[in-house]
Image (cartoon, rainbow, N blue to C red; front, side, top):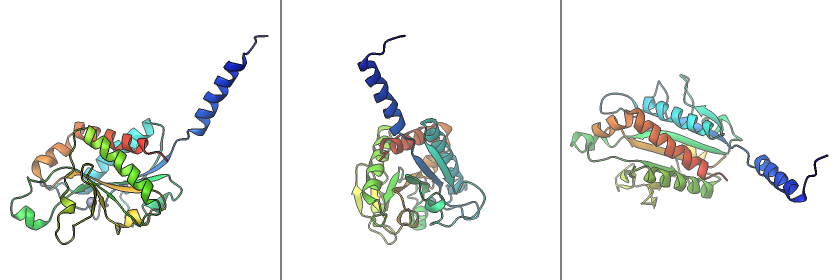
Length: 228
Ligand SMILES: [Zn+2]
């Protein structure tokens, strides 16, 4: 009968318990808006929801490849209320809503739409897990920066309807306490505006499969990095 040393037995048990305790997280990946109410309209006329669907699908696939369990919301043709999105799987560990940004119509009319580009990340202090939401916003922001993306900072502009308190300028993280999907989420939650689709140059870039893959990789790695 082969002899098993105490040290190899301990190594085996440690490896076993490491695998057993490092469980996959369950994550809700939300595609912002719906087919009937598709959100912003890009410079080309293509609507935001379609960009959100493409990027949220890529994020989902990356998270699944990393061993996470994913529930998608906003990804079929049905209408879904804002509070129903994070509550579609109330026991999930994390909620992320994917959006693409616009800007005030007056700015577009003034020809300023080529001036804005980049991402923005939102958290709500009314979420019951605000601190953990902020940790995740930071890991996602770090990954986006590392991927060569830059924050737009547009939502901090002191104009009506914006003027969001900037928590972290370098990482483009804003507080938006009344965002319904964030404040009604029973789990840590963030909303990511991946880029500005009313900027025609930015829109073209955001539509490219290579950009979608790069953004999805950064976002999904940021989510994995912030596991509670
Ligand atoms: Zn949106």
